[in-house]
Image (cartoon, rainbow, N blue to C red; front, side, top):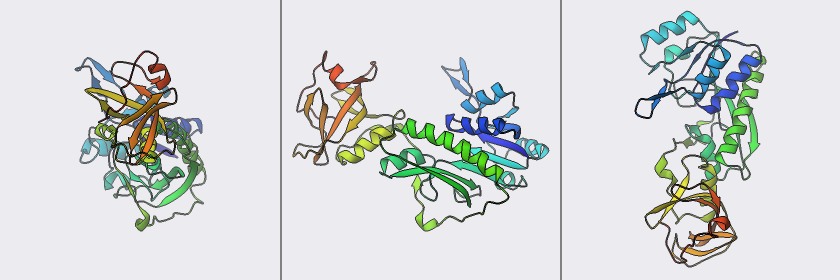
Length: 307
């Protein structure tokens, strides 16, 4: 089976590796254009392109797949039997979706129809889901609305966004290869649109915490946004990043965002009538550090409001 693989970030690398390792004929890799950093002085490849070059695979990088006649012709000449996609970053037009004999399969980081969209991993953590997983699905013109072929689940527990991302990337790679091995015998399952939810793209400003929310939700947000976009508040004019937290189950009448205690156990911040205990922070220009280590050389004024 001739496969074209489309993907861009770290999440998509294990699936590409798995396809090659399993002996599939990956005829070409399609990824987003190179990024220019440092005022044009340095060109950065996507993680998928780096892996494709390492594996000696040809690479295509259209700026936009929709309406690109040259790219469409290249794909027609490749004549893939199947297109496998993982976090490519662009919506594929109908002429690409209809091109391969066996269709286009997507490796999606949630248990569809829950969390369609760009950031399913982080949204599952924030919303307090007990489990999430991978869905291998047929792609169609709607956003993650296609028929499902296979699923694999994993508990979320206290995993950070990075930890869950890495786990799901490996799960997705294994499930993709397994799906291809049993493609002829697997049954398509339609999604129940009434159960669908949308996982919107993350933005940097979302990391600015709202301390009127419950401590439980804030703790989940801090885990979900590790490592990006990170969670933060302002201590005076300084941004304090909050990297680890817990919920001690203490109630308070203090105003939201008020620092009510600071010690070896952490910094206690009033939030939604309860306490969020932060145990790892980062100040501007400094490294992440445990609160008890930070307090050995620094002080935090109780009563200050983290804005």
